[in-house]
Length: 336
Image 1 (cartoon, one colour):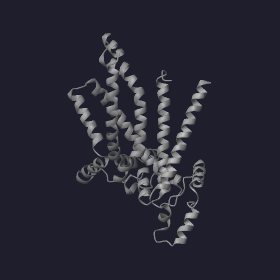
Image 2 (spheres, one colour):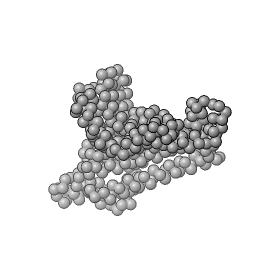
Image 3 (cartoon, one colour):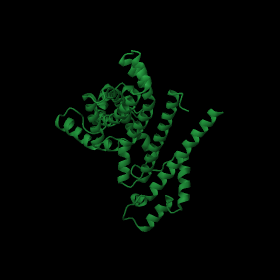
Image 4 (cartoon, one colour):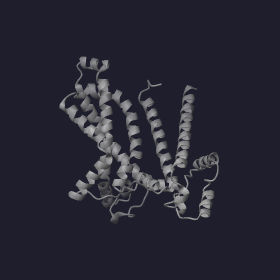
């Protein structure tokens, strides 16, 4: 019974959070200064055309009626139609989101593989030149704007040195040559056995992925260092050292497991941040992902994609937070 109550409580909290997110996204779309009707028919359209379009879109009805229709559409998986592409927003998101997912997944893997050992190393070598160097590198990662790093990367490696491909997801000779199965270009090219397209996709991914990974690695390293410093000052670590255990065993078998529980939440939220925070990077590198789709829609007052993308990102945050909480409980049974 207690387990069933916890499950019901979790599901209830999840549904309430998603409902609140739906309310927020709805009213964001209504209070924006841009008029979606004018964006569709044009600023110079006759008044009767504007009014007819407003009626067809249901924007002449009271807000509570509009919100009811909005919830009904959400329950049926309908996020409306994009003015720019004339496609259902769900269709557009299904086409653009895998590109963002590919960037974010590669970035979080690199950031975790580099950031966690660096954080542990900095904590073990606290106040030494190693610690100071790692902290400066992480500070630079947090301080430098992402668009500055992206533009510098393009300038140096593409324009000056010529060792990296230009903006975009692939060269023009490979466009539409790989059958879409998962939407992840690297995976689809491997499934198709097209290794030339695979290498081209990796080359185009390298710069945006490394920039996002550096930004995320800085945060993961700082959090790992903080957690490890607390763990290394614990009595159980002091006891382990007094028993004569090697430093490697003390660090990785006694101190790090307690840190790993906390890092689960850090990694989950960092990954969610990458999924929604790649907007600037995608625009600099002309990466056809959710961020570029969202920016284009926002600049053209196409509100259905803006609301749909915002709702998707918020849902991803909620679900990843829930997943982190579940993993936290599974990893550490002491957590009630």
